[in-house]
Image (cartoon, rainbow, N blue to C red; front, side):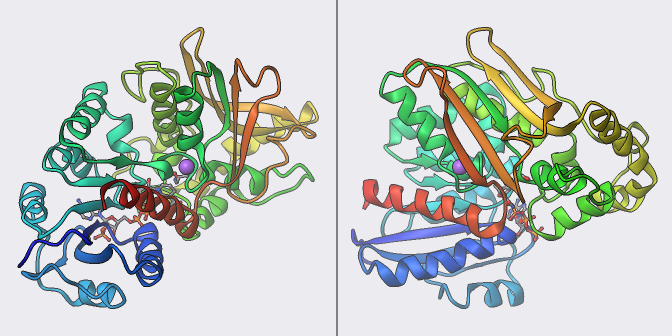
Length: 365
Ligand SMILES: NC(=O)C1=CN([C@@H]2O[C@H](COP(=O)(O)OP(=O)(O)OC[C@H]3O[C@@H](n4cnc5c(N)ncnc54)[C@H](OP(=O)(O)O)[C@@H]3O)[C@@H](O)[C@H]2O)C=CC1
Ligand SMILES: N[C@@H](CC=O)C(=O)O
Ligand code: NA
């Protein structure tokens, strides 16, 4: 195939809640922007894949083709070879929560393949992986964007980068960083009183597409810890890992060893009284309980867990899956820069991924 500069090849790994919404947004983008021509050349789930010798898959039919495909996914080094041999530049869109895929970013980037992703694992894994990713990108001139790894499509990462790059000094970042936790506490312990059953709300959050593939990754606080690790690193703190600071888990002790997410959800109703007690303790003080995180840059302290809030506090008054993230900086003084809005859900997350893709296109095409 002849080399062409006005075409970009897109490989999509992961076609779940976010991946499906991303494909729909990609179809719109490809129709609206004739150049560079956006060609879907690979799509995979954990068990199946679609790809061919002419690097061309119809975006509209990709999901049906994937469902009926008999091909297995390429290994990650094979995929890097396949994309590096494409007739023009390629971008990997990682819509999984896979650590293995995240670990392969330095390989893709070093082969000139750019990456956009909502997957937190690469940027909140070991500090060495973080360094390898940005070193590989800088050396090869490839790009890596991950806006949806914090606050879904909300402009959290881009805002923090802008603050830092323009020389502001970030002193503190705090707020609600989980769409799942926000939804759970807003519906289980609303400021108006009453509220749903904890375990039933957890099931609802999963059905609405807010949770991680395994909802225990939200309830154990690690999802928020990953997000804070990413933000802390961008703010200049070389946090080693999401387990290197205090993180409160909401997994009942008795369920810590169950083997699957499904079994966990089945058994959770038996432990609803534990969360009811937490809620009642806050109510006794006229307050509500919420799951929050904070990074204090000066004292280098990061923490994640439950706190009680007055009912008039903006964190108490959140609705749905909303996140609220406050940036305290030297320039903004005592009135923080605040970002608020839906922090989970397929469409809003895919929006962050697609807008990252547009940013990469503007730099490599
Ligand atoms: N949902 C949300 O609101 C948000 C999600 N995110 C992040 O987006 C990512 C995707 O989330 P979501 O779409 O909700 O998750 P889903 O579980 O709905 O989808 C994950 C997809 O990834 C596939 N997958 C898993 N491992 C691999 C692998 N090794 N190779 C290829 N495909 C793989 C799964 O395949 P299979 O179907 O075969 O298992 C599935 O298609 C996660 O990293 C999540 O943290 C970020 C912000 C918000
Ligand atoms: N499970 C996460 C999804 C987005 O990062 C959340 O609930 O915030
Ligand atoms: Na974001």
